[in-house]
Length: 441
Ligand SMILES: Cc1ncc(COP(=O)(O)O)c(C=O)c1O
Image (cartoon, rainbow, N blue to C red):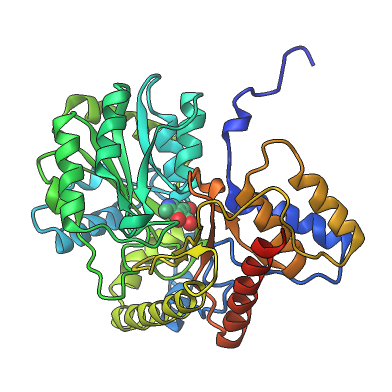
């Protein structure tokens, strides 16, 4: 090669949720008899959720319309009628909202919005991330900045609410921070933020002249008596705000790849306006987001069966979450918080219970040799070591907390499994494996 092709920033792209799949594939090659239970990816379809009939009917109706317009390109920033609908929808939740449809941008999944968003940050502007965090945000931010992420703690001893003192201290320590990322309902902790918490975060943003990004991709998944507070109401005319939403989990249709960004209070600060205009240009280069998904989006959310379906979805998620909590909260060596939204739980190991000698029995010698060579690499995190043994010994695939930039060792699982017998079996085996692993040395 005439020029170097190794990107020195590649090590900053970290996505533990799917990296563990490569380990799983390797194990399958070594031991084809292995079966896996995927507790790593938040895909309701994989966990036996049926796509609602009204979604399939709406798709069929749309593709059969004369003219076939839905097979063509859409407007590069999103279909205008759908963006106008997003504005009306935002007003339904937040009547004061002055969102303009020109400040709503559609992409192929929210992941693509997140990518475009961080890519357009000018050099030197940082976005403070929660820890534990959702790695798509944190990796893109860190990759763009060519530096390790700047993090604020979520507190496991306070139902995973943000540690406000830590957040303020980090903002003070890093004058390059331009915005605060909030993920509410939270992936990976399943927490919902209280109105008071969001009020304090907006106050901090006001005090330090920051903007806020609120990833609300799970905002319809709230249960166990919790309430979702619209940050748009609190931030109205106070701080610039980016709300991120998508179809993936709402309907559920993660393979539909449809997400969007709403830029609220866009003209409060000319710097923020200029940043938005940059993202708009960047989005044009992607040509457009999928036309069919955007076209039917309003009729899906407005469908007479949507609310009933959503209530049922939430009540099943609540039941699943509480059943799993019941099992894991009795597991020796784990600390577990009840969850109130989304469909993830992050049990943590009690202080000091992990060490670099523990293991679980792996019957296949080649699989055992492979896991041992991996976990003995220098600097291998202790929670990841547990997850590797768990995977090879039981087939259960969970993601280590360290894969979420977490300072607390633990792991994240989904609470989606809709098959009660399989779910009971998975969590009973997981619980037994945790106790056996901790007791192994
Ligand atoms: C917090 C959060 N934001 C964004 C995304 C990406 O969603 P999409 O499927 O629309 O790319 C996910 C997916 O799991 C998520 O958990």
